[in-house]
Amino acid sequence: DMTAKILGQLADKILEHKKFGQDLLTTDDCSTKETRERVLVLMVVMRFDSDASVKRYANGAWKTSGGAPKLQKTIAPAIEKMVLKMRAGELGLGMQKLAAKALEELAKDGTMEAPSGDEPAAASKFVIEPPARDAGSDSASIAAGTAPEGSLEGGALFQRLASGEAEAKEWLWNQATFSQ
Image (cartoon, rainbow, N blue to C red; front, side, top):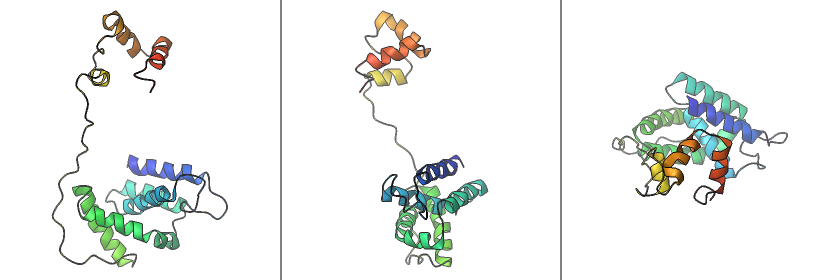
């Protein structure tokens, strides 16, 4: 729900740079064509979601972005590529199920042909791997909620930093670890 809403807001920000007669794909003053195309592809895919509010946000963003059949035909190769990637299970089980529904609808309206062959094996649940951290690094200790090694005043400064005072901000800006 929120993802569709944020995607619509992203499209609106890109469209702030459009000139008369342009749609999201042809607005070349902001971002690359590949980025704008990917945003449009995600909108098309979200239009097939089972959640009504996601569909509503995606449809609204699609219409605002110039969502005409001509635009959908223009980005059809990118839609096909994304849906086939989803169907293969590269993006997890939820996207694989959504791809089946999207393929059915897109084949019905003639945007793309239904793939031939057997259905792919069920995908595993998509898991985002946590970033690898050095256990002894300052960032790992801060993430764990402890004062970094070698902090001043036995950790008292770290406590003061957590309060969000002006001194804390100044200290952070002057530390080589945080200013990179």
